[in-house]
Image (cartoon, rainbow, N blue to C red):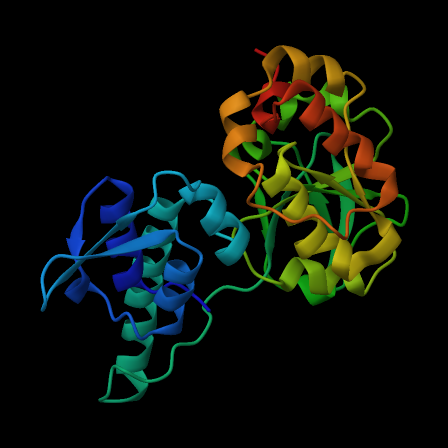
Length: 285
């Protein structure tokens, strides 16, 4: 299930604390039925003919969208959908008088960056990735993209960490590395990884949602090649900078039954300190 533009707009209203008439949505649609069943969206009977809907204040809204729909930022997601709709409609009009022709993906591939220059091959030609603050490389023809065998591929979950990698060099001393942004979200990067043998290192939030992303989006497809990046001072950072509210919000929201034994100690530390840790903490000021 994917959230469309109209649904995203309603969710933004609910996120802002609004109570809306249930007529704003179709409660028979599977996507709304799921949110109601999960008690993210609550339905209240006003009178015999009308109902209202509002968000459950006791459930972490952002974490729910991230876990069930892969959406980290609903506002940015809506902007992406609206821009995509403009492009798709313009393309459809050129080939048909009906602008409602089935939508096609406009962009394929994934975004990468490096901390040191890296010589790669793209479409049979040498292509050098350069570290440039404020600019990244978007690999469109990813099926024709080849990197050296000794490169470790690092997936970066949050945009701010991806943008400021130069302030996190202390975490990456055993390179060479190539960094891949989780956004735009699609399966192209995983497909590319499945066709090569490079190790994958996941750099994300140290919370239940972040570990769930690692397990469901990467480890399940890449197997033992996929590892979590765990900074050497992780426990110190968790104790000093950890977020108790984040821990409380996510505590009963995620089931991590498939967590490999090598990472169970991380969950034990979450419970010990009753905190979780956002990866932005590792950006040096």
